[in-house]
Length: 353
Image (cartoon, one colour):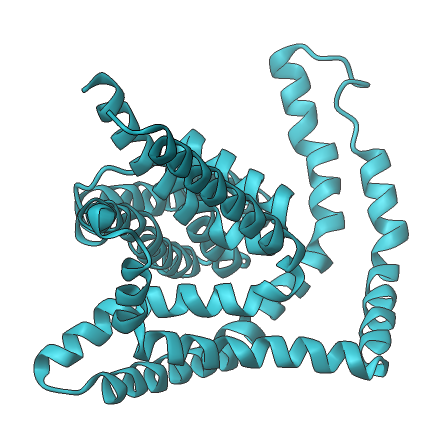
């Protein structure tokens, strides 16, 4: 039984802790415009930590292992910029040139078939307005983009700020990765001694879930994107690389990448090929093989059997994070959602206990 003074002290401490938590959240909200490079750097360090630990097991010290990891990441980033960006740019230009013709094909071929099959009225499905709007305003898109780029480049402070933010990401990531273990130890020491074992256990479980749905799902997305892009390119689809990479990106939500990708690729096949049956079957074969690989290889290898997030929870977390905090919220959505899942599981076990 606590004395009145001890009970009052405990209440004050609880209220102070809650007030500090609310103040910290409010401060983060106010500072969100400048937090992006720091959060991106922290995520980069977190994603790179397992590789750094493996290099340490070989006998390298932490600083040398971190340097090797960042040299490799820099080389891969430069390779991606030199190879992928021009390739994707050409695909987007091709899509820009083909989009009016695609809409015309939908209006003249696909929609009449749907109207006849489903018994719809002609006015129900009409793309004339959309095609006219794109035809009228598509040319102005390049002019608008050029004007926007010109304004940004003429605004020295804005350009300098953007470049500084981008340059900060690898710098912050390097120092966080080098001192990762020390920082985690100092954070753990901030907890009261009687809570440290519980906090350490919670942190370990959160790390497992976050690893599965940040590190693991990211590797699954990259693997699927490369597989789909290569497969559609081999089929001969002109927009295959763009559609394949977008399919991999959409795979952050289970099955969404498959659904979006196979629908877009099927429409592209019907538009591009006169004799479309064989290419369409090959596209379906590519996406079917991708689903098999995801189930039997990519997910077991990268994600494992750890408990994860429901697809609906993933969608809600990403949308809510973007709505509340913009790009910073999108970066933090899945890690925070994973942590909330672990905390709710422990709270449920404590209550039902």
